[in-house]
Length: 167
Image (cartoon, rainbow, N blue to C red; front, side, top):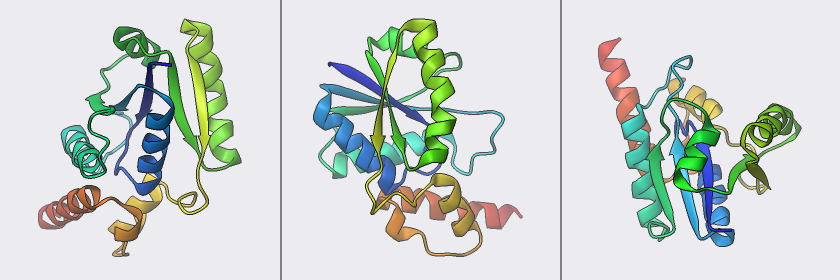
């Protein structure tokens, strides 16, 4: 398998995401982390900030040569996969709820374009980490540093400080 896509909002990019990216890089020649912008979600970090933090993390982890970061353009994920020549999508699964959420999208991507999806089960040490929970804990003043790579932690702290100043 040559190219796979790891899509997501990554708001913020967590140690769980990093683990999935590292594992995907071990089984594919090229991994493209596709950072989405979902206008129906209110992101804490803008798309450029997320991409930068992920790139910094990948470089620090020695993954910069095999994993690249790209903003996901508006439109269908399968169109992006075709555009970059990806043979599969990679998704991390923490539990049954994630599987239930992913299954219809997996079937639709297969129906629309014959794009396969590889599911990687989260390792126990990071299975409890989700971006939404990290954001919530951080916004309520909790310490989330142990769940984030340093670049993501810096970006999150900056966004929270900016948010506090404008509130």
